[in-house]
Image (cartoon, rainbow, N blue to C red; front, side, top):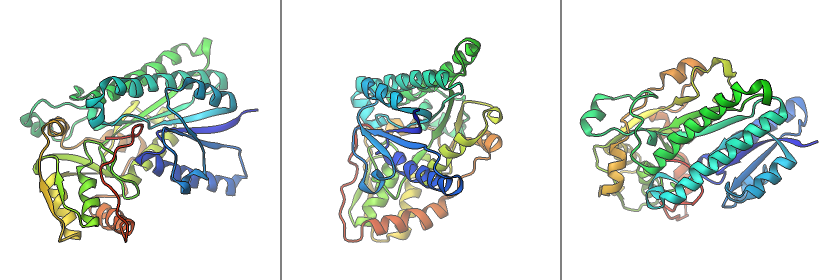
Length: 362
């Protein structure tokens, strides 16, 4: 009999590492309460996991495009849910659009097929959790951005980047697979259960910024904590929404646990707080008064951020599944980001902005 498992792709990335810790803690609690239920956490990434995480999971160092590895996994495990985090980030995808399409779209398509097959075999749907992105939106100019201060899920879905196009298309693929297989359920068994959340810019204290277009915020913090000067690659006035990493993980875990019948849509906006780059600089400076932060906009990355909304309307998520972030802007900086990043750099120097090739998000 195959062991039951949760699969996390892109597990060595920022969201993946935080999600592993949250799910491992949840599994440990279940074992203490109900005994060992035999459920495993499987992780995939092109890179190895940090040593402190590797002991709590079964890690496979491989690409999500490696069909032989995926076939081996489903022969050994009954996969109950998939957290599909693996992707090429927005900035890199602009330089390698063909590679981005292969990883972001073809990789997702392969996993959707796997989930649909597993749903049919199990006799109940596999939950497929997909972190989408603010990059699916594309506002044409600054006037429109000001006019649409908080964008709803169905508004301005005209992405300006390959990454945004990939994410929006994969949302539609997930919806198609769910509905198509649901219509065929009488003959083929249950459909897969696809659920997506659209993240704003994510800020982690545990892992380094990894090349996303929204990473100017966390890069400011990491540079300031090391006493290094930092030149921000967007204008001081540009504004987008952000979220602390613990809330990103909370959102994925929360929406995974909600009964399907209470969800009014398959894709939800979620957010926490909105800051301009100048606001972010001022927040960092309040904790690191000697920091040296300047603004040197990069035209390509600036155009991308200009096309993203200043804020997201997440009222539907709040209504349907009681979404609410734990960290507002005050708590995010004072209780999570600054204390943990300070501890990280006590006597240690780490490079900033190094991108890992098969990781998420931004």
